[in-house]
Amino acid sequence: MWALAAHFWPRYRHKAGWVAVIVAEVVVLAQVILGVILQVNEDIEGDRHQLYGFSAFASVGIIYAYRNEMRDRPYLLYCLGSLWLMGLGIRAAVL
Image 1 (tube, rainbow, N blue to C red):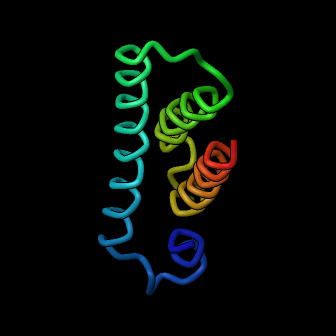
Image 2 (image 1 turned 180 degrees about the horizontal axis):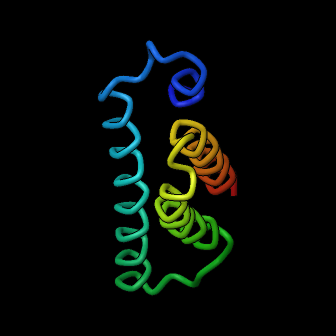
């Protein structure tokens, strides 16, 4: 929600917001890596939970790829991307 506020109101455009976005994206990548390691070591069959994890992993890459095309609206890009990642995380947790 920080990125949405920063898109409309410049007073919310701080470096701390970008740090939070980067930390969240690194956590998504770490979860995917740890999930793969756990699946390989424990010989767990894949299911929809892994689908949502890899979708989140791909989404981080897609968000990063679009940053040049939306150079004039980066806060809106990261707002929508973060909401998408949140939805994938909630859906994966519910399964």
